[in-house]
Length: 198
Image 1: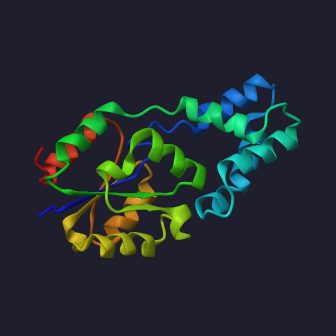
Image 2: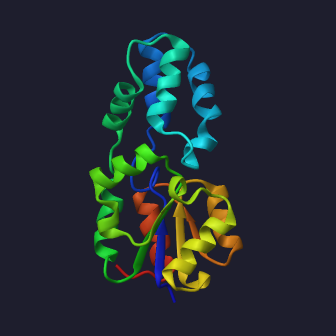
């Protein structure tokens, strides 16, 4: 029996806009997309573990390529492109009170603050596990296990939803049901097939 549904944020609740943002930045300043991407990727591990913020990374991008904007200004451009996936949020509202809803997300500290403010994540989900706060990230099995312990349920009672197959594979390996998110219609179909009632 399903008692808990665990959501990722980027690519599930909010459109995954990282590539469009970097492409926009590269196009604006006539930079090589891969060169910009390499700088971001270099810091991605530190970002997820809360050792550096998104703004600080974008400061490094600005310095490396001699851009006129500060990291804070570039970050505002990034956040302006974020869009909620409205159909999935409607599912969240329908499931609230019927199941325990939780978050397991690899997100930096600036992203945590932005998403909490913009989408009131903690209003709908508890517990909320962000990698930057816990100093561990998906696909580390310990990160999943700590969340399940906090929820007070058994792994077999959980469904985990993520847009990254490798993250879902780890959840399944621990005994959860797992759904690789593709689109809202597919998500609802798979949730219903798993026994979730809307």
